[in-house]
Length: 116
Length: 112
Image (cartoon, rainbow over all chains, first blue to last red):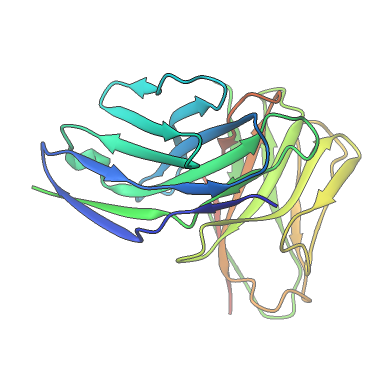
């Protein structure tokens, strides 16, 4: 089974500053999808950004961008101009591109605190 | 509006009782999932179903059971065999091989 590792249980950032959350994964597959989910205090899981492994270009969604390093199996999330509403638990997730199994694999999460 | 509903939001049960958590989706998604979330452990897969009347065990299926009689419904029963059932339970669904999962709001189960 694939494994997803988030080595930073907690991170903090000053409001308006930039922070990077790390994620590494282990797979033997060449085609897959990677995701970052946000879980605020309400505990509703919200998709932040997704990346297709076959695309070399890093995905970007407004203040959120990723640094996808396929050879290194690394998928970090950069949050620019951090806002108080960004405070949440962030989960990295992996999903095979093959339909068989159809499972998502999640990391253990990084708790982000935004300091006013 | 399309989405996933889970009920109830909070659930209390006495030890030794079975309890069923509801999950309904109107997104017309084929696949549905149940996860358990504990502090420091992320999301762990309990069961998933890719089609009606079919489901597969996840990593921590012991003490749980599911059914998938309708496409839109995937209830989870926490049985008395589950040793430590107090947790936050999330239901999710998705369609296709290239789409993300959509999540319900979750149910917090506390066994007294």
